[in-house]
Image (cartoon, one colour):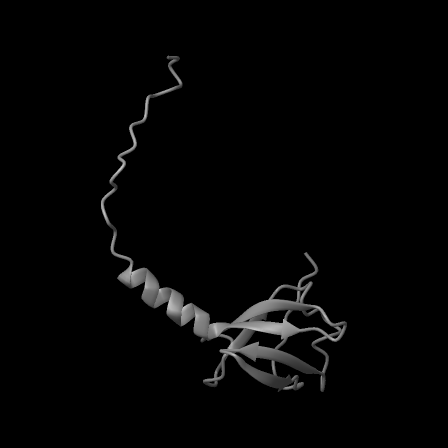
Length: 104
């Protein structure tokens, strides 16, 4: 065996690991993830979160990639159709809200 290789032994009966904390986090994340329907018939995903320094109100912020919603799709008075927790929602983009996009 070379200096760079080691023999690894894998137990056939690994110890059980509690996923209680992970399951709680995943359930909370699932409540915040949404499916965003685009005007061209395709869709993407996003999620809602609160960003205290951007958001002085208690409203959540929608985060997604630029290829899902670009600067033209978040213009004033546009609407976004999405599904969250199995329910269809329509969001109207208002000029008073901050909008950020990055073409990367």
